[in-house]
Amino acid sequence: AAVPHAAEQVAVAAEKRWAWVVAAIIALLLVMMVVTGLHWAAMPPSRVETVDVKTLHVKGEFVESNLGTTLGSDGKVMVRLVAQQYSFMPPCIVVPAEMSVTFRATATDTIHGFIVGTTNANTMLIPGFVATFTTSFKKPGEHLMPCHEYCGTGHEAMWARVQVLP
Ligand code: CUA
Image (cartoon, rainbow, N blue to C red):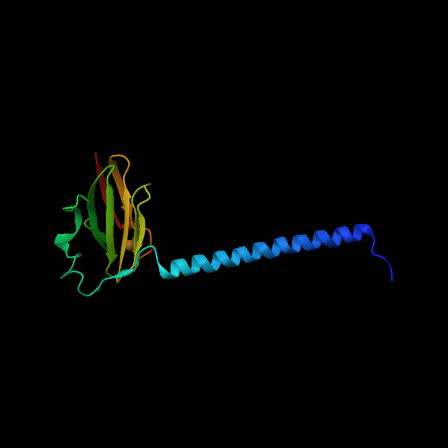
């Protein structure tokens, strides 16, 4: 039997090393997929809370008189809004700058969404679910708040206005 050449031994060793590196990368990717998959499956970022679309307008926190900006007794600013084809209720939202503002919103008919100007306030609204997030607006000004999920023929005319007060 031929004795393997030294160079061949070096090549075989290098191939084995790289095979381990590739196997480790694949294993790492699989672990990341499983961990993030379980994490998001167990704890979605929003839309966890449900709300009855049929009674939304007549009782509970999304009745018309309860929409808009409120300052809670705990000093927290809360904005509640409802999206429907093809408007947001309320159509004009006033919030303070440099304060933490929590949004709670839902949709009545189909999927909508909104983004406030160029800020990071951005969410999707799904009928039957409450989308909630907290953000703060750095500087005073006025922002357009368009619907950013295609929701029908009036989609591009669906927007509200957000005024950030100093
Ligand atoms: Cu509502 Cu697009």
